[in-house]
Amino acid sequence: MNFKSITALVAASALCAPMAFADGHMANEMTIVSWGGAYSKSQQRAYHDPYSEMTGTKIINDDSSAEAVSKLRAMNEAGNVTWDVVDVVAADALRLCDEGLAMEIDPDTQLADAPDGTKASEDFGDMLVGDCFIPQIVYSTTFGYRTDLVGDTPPTSVCDVFDTEKYPGKRSLEKRPIANVEWALICDGVAYEEVYDLLATEAGQERAMAKLDTIKDDVIWWSAGADTPQLLADGEVIMGSTYNGRLFSVIEEQKQPVAMLWDWQMFDLDGWIIPTGLSPERQARAMDYIMFATDTQRLADQAKYISYGPARKSSAPLVGKHADLGIEMAPHMPTDPKNSVNTFLYNYEFWADYRDDIDAKWQAWLSK
Image (cartoon, rainbow, N blue to C red; front, top):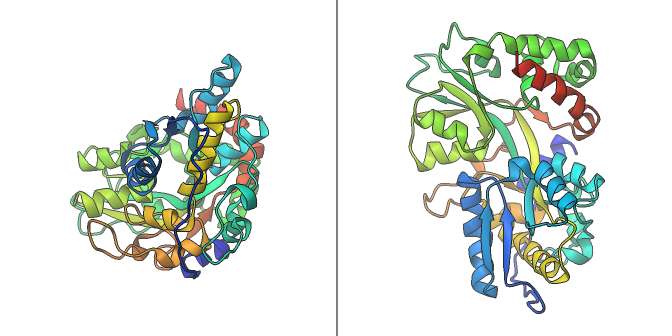
C-alpha cells in the first residue's frame, strides 16, 4: 500500500444503489466487538441500527478490540468462541489469519459489488492487505493538544511532544511501541526513509526508547482510544496521541478547547474479521452483516459521524456533511492534502517481523 493509493480514495467516483440481503437459517443475535467511544457510536448509527431494523437481529456490543488477539486465542483454546464479528486493525487481522483464528474471505463472492458492478476486490484495491481482513476505514494516530494550555505558540511539530520545557505538563501516549518508536527516531534526527531500517537493529530500538526516556516521567499511558480524549477534556494532559476520529469528536462535537496536530500522523487501516469456530448459523449471520456493513453506501454513511476515510473507492464521493453538525467532513479526514504533508504509512511487514521482539523490549522498558 502506498500513500497515493490511500489518498486516491477521496477522489474516486461512483453511484450508489441499495442492496438486498438474505435472512434465512441465521442466528437471531450476534456479538460485535469494537473499540468503544465515538467510533462504536458511528458504527451503531451507520451499520448496527439499520441492520437490526432490517433483519430484527439483536446486536450486543463489546468494546474489547484492543485485546482481540489474546482473547480470541483463549476462546479458541477453550473451544468456546463467543464473538461473531470483530473490529481489528489490519496488523492484528494478519496475525489472527496466520494463526487460523479468522476466516478467509473471498471479496468477490462474499462482499458486495460497487453500485456500478465493480467487484469488491477492485473497489477495495490495495486496502485488501490480508486474506481474512475486510477493510472499513483509513484512519490515523495523531496528536491533540489543549489550546488553552500551550500559550501563544501552539505546537506545530510532533517533536514538540518531546519539548517539556516549552510545553510543560503531562502527555498521553499509547501503551505500545507502534508509532511511539517511529516518532521518537524522527525527533532524534533520523530521516523518514531510514526509520524502519534503524528500528530493525537493536541499536535503533535502544535509541528510540532512550528518546522516549526524556519524557517518560511526564507520560500517562493509554490502552483505549477513548482515554486521551477524556484526559484532554479533563485538562489532565496538555497533549496526547489517539485516533483522529476521537479528536474530531472532542473538537467538533464536544466543543472542547482542543486542536489537532497532524504532523507525522500514522496512517493505518481498520476493519472486520470473522472468527473461526462459529456454528453455521452464526457464521451465516456474521457474513450477512459483513456484506451489508461494508457495501458502498454503508461505508460512506459512517463518515457522516466520524472523520475516517472509507476504504472503498466508490464510497469516497458519497462522503458529505456530518449528520448532526452539518459541516463538510472531507477537510477533517486524515487523507486531506492539508493534513497529510508529513505522514507515516504503517509498515505491516516490519511489524509482522519485529513486533514480538520489540514488544518484549518495550514491556521491559516500561517496567523500569
